[in-house]
Image: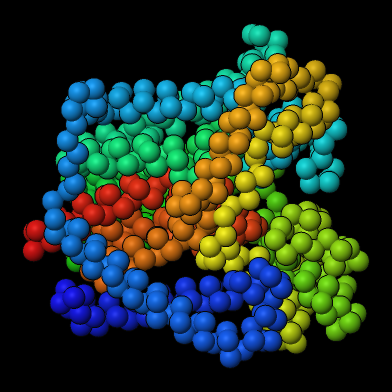
Length: 571
């Protein structure tokens, strides 16, 4: 108890704990109302009870967070947890220490193999329709509903991912005469790349003296942190390879903090991140700007110059790629509708709830950008695509200027409507709700395969799962296991976006309180992902967009503990 009360004497810690507790309690209280009513009507109708719940949650969370901080302090002071193995397990641990990369790679490959077989030839999703239609230049699918003058390739989804997927499928058709073979080739490449990234993390753990505990925990986490994860590994989406590069980026940053010298992995992984997700550019900019601020604070001119040069290099590469190479290749830029999803959602809700208060001028301004008459009908508080897909791509800069003038004019009249739209759209980033396990399952993939075959019928597309009763039954068993894991007590918490949001926020706050700039800097790229999720087109519950945070959580905690321990001992 003495140790606990000593923590409460730290002013910085108490302030951080109060802020975190009040913020989390807000989402626990308001989140339930939004989940059940779509707004705060439940709170309005039960104000006294809601206030009591809020205060109760705040107190409980304050105590919980302070106890957690005390336990972290104790863990930092102790030596790393050691695992003693005998017999076959002891021999395995020996191999893991001596050959961490190869041992991890083989272990995870064997463990994932049953799920790999179930997913054969690979899982596809709705984004793949636009990607492959553009790559094959088919006339049966128009991504933006505009007149194309040449190639239908665009950079809406990062072009390198589109070309990788297309190249694999084209290779499968040329060599084996099968679209399935090409999809399997892509799936295999993605799977092997991710295994390499996971194995590299374990290699870093071993090189820097982490205990076997972290190696085993990380491998178990990769396998069991939610039943949908085993499907993600074989899903043809940019987010998976992007996540692998973020793991490498985290490892590169950790190596810099430990070795005090720049390494190739950080540069390589940063370029890979930009290649597979466009918002990685802003994540890297933010991370490097924070690094410059914190490094220059200590007047380390050499490091400030190195980071500044890396920052300039990233800006140059990004500018040349988007403003020179892509236009020269005749590749369209992505639509602005993605970054406008949040204001579009707010506008649609306003039209639905307060349509009578929209002036003729405001209506005309909105209609120049979105189809006003369908907004109320298309509005889905949990999904932005129905509204954002109605964006008129030929809108001019004057049209956008008039739209935002109307947007802010309406905000003045009914700010609560915008607040409700934001809250219902994003609250699950902070409120514990399990991820919808219906996403990206075998049935949805099969449906998308049929749609792809229709879109690419002139190419002879034949995407399908193997027509075998045994394999169909096997996929059903695997899906049942995945579904059970997603909802199983304790394991089920790994299917909620809020688990990662709050773990990351608390770690960053702890780093601030302990004045550890290294740990805070490792948190910055992942905090940036949360910020982009708030302003981006996805629902707060859609955990695919938090996949980098999800898979980096154990390495981030392990590396942070190592840095905390080393800093404490050096002091």
